[in-house]
Image (tube, rainbow, N blue to C red; front, side, top):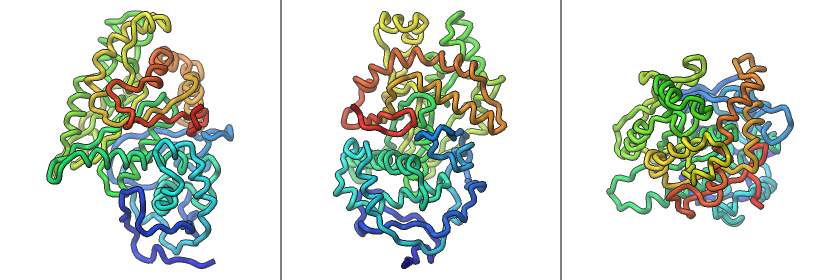
Length: 431
């Protein structure tokens, strides 16, 4: 088979952040002859600190096992700037892309993000390049992707990235030449365990390699300090929903306003700020704000802020409606009245990850804890998982239907992408 010397020079990402590529080649797929030379036991090395999170490695054979053959799945480090010298540099083989093109066009999100098969064909080079980046990031073999892996990359992560790029372009087009352009804040509202952190991780990486500056934050970063949590618990005796961090009322909204306001002003070179982080392991798992000396520092100008959380976009409902779900929600519902001004009003584009049954959260969390225990790490027992999730389920049942039917407060339907996922965390066609 013929080869192309695509990597004869040191590889540098130079692609344009546009949908379409001017030098489109609709019948070529670049695959790596020695992709397996990157050991599954090796780790990508990174330069800057942020946070760590784990991804699921299910043995069920479902779509959730898309990373099951990669040791990287056990503990992805949420960091930036991988060393490019670790990437393959030998000539790439050329094979037909027709099957992959057809697979991309069969994805459930293509119509949602406003792309036609013709536009996919015109921009196929970008699709393939983004796919290669993600294979390298997650240490997947680009020549031997399983169906779940292929679906996760080409039916989910790449389409969402292209939608985000479109949103950024539309946001920037509203400003005149020479004006300072604030970063676009994109909100990701998704239940716990459904893969939103891994999605944000992938998007953040793709922004990095195409030259955009991004920042990532979570509602978890704004939890009250340990002292603040104690005061909240004492002020609400007997309310299990406010006994631990999680529900509305357990966040430092002044800190979130300060942080989000500062992020939207990161428009110039040299401007720096630190992003708050939370230590969930402190005080035997009750958690506390991490020492500011350990907060990651970012530098402007920012193009995009990725803001994720399980209850982003939740809005207060009539008190009788929430009390019908759980009487303890009345206080949570009242607390939620102040959250729009602290969170949602900063978000200009929304991604809502929709699930059919909130009970999936228990199964996903249980699988994650089992994987942690099997890896020799501390993990909750099955009963502890059930107790933990039970503190969130009332809010899911009370607020998700309205979020799905109406969208978040102040959201523009043209800037809202709703993605329904199955139990394997993969997008499906909405009914």
